[in-house]
Image 1 (cartoon, rainbow, N blue to C red):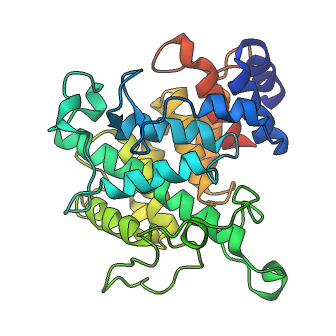
Image 2 (tube, rainbow, N blue to C red; image 1 turned 120 degrees about the vertical axis):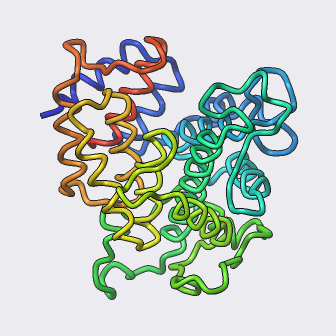
Length: 320
């Protein structure tokens, strides 16, 4: 069993102020101070994204998604900065439903996000589609009428979370006048079946089609393994359960050899969209995290020890 107390102690001992605030949100839903939230949002470009290179105005798809992941752990996806970032991401979608970094970032982008690389393009498509899905899901929860939980049958997409307080101004399709509101793709089997919060429905469904078109018969993608768990989460939320299950069979098969960072990210993504904690993929992921937790309570990052706290926070999100 994962030792959450030890993991919490690791973050308290080694995390900075923002990381400790993320821990407080994940543990107790404690709202960070306005000053801390402002510091977490610093550096946003006028277009709405965050740059890959500090001090520039050229926003990066990958860097923006990374920042959204941090803001999500602060309960800040409903704040104006995150909403502008989500709108910018939606505006960057290409005609085929995918995403790619600006060609001007070719020299600065990491290998997993390099423009012109088909594997990187698929990874960014899965990542952005995931975050737009999460944004609409949170908005739907915030817009749910009082008593929804007692007057409707349980919905598996909502079973892991109560109504979300992170949208105090209302969901983005109602509060910001997003140009993507209600933009569902014609012909989709789920068109018109949004629970509410469909600001990015059109972009999400186009992204889903792009991902589904690359899903191989054996449940893999011609890209990095992360594309699998992000797509499995998105497909689950879109009620494409067969496609999601095909991917999860592959993930479960590889679970015994996954790095702790990958196991944590996989489980956190599935939990974020409401996959039940007793689902077999999540049980296997927690087993892997139990095996790889260090004696100091943390988990090792794939990107160097300076990111161990980030990986440990992902594990906490996955196991809480």
